[in-house]
Length: 112
Image 1: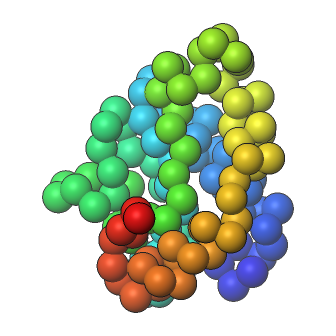
Image 2: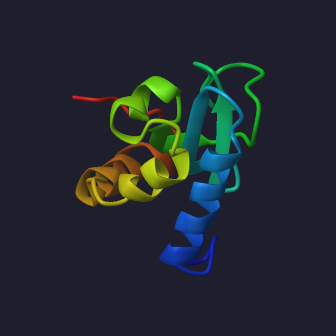
Image 3: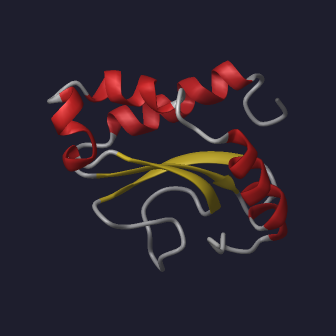
C-alpha cells in the first residue's frame, strides 16, 4: 500500500506497463534502490538487471511475458485479456517468498 495505495492500484499500474509495451517484452514488479516497490517494462528479452536496461532500476521479483508467443494460442491479439487473466494464476506465496528472501535484500531471485 505504501508504494501504490492498494493492491488494485498496483495491478492497474502493472497492467498499464504490460499493455503499453509495444511489441515484445516484459512487465515487472520489483524493489527500487530506495526500497520501494516499482513497476516497469523492458523490450524484447531485456530485464531490469541488465546494464543499460530501459525503465526504472529495480530488483524484479514478478514478471509477465508480453511476447505474442506467450498468449497467441489462447488469446490471439487480445493482449489486455491475457494481462487480466495473468492475475488469476499468480502464485502469491512464491511472489512473497521471492520478495522477502531476495528482492527486499537487494539480491536477484535465485529459482530453486
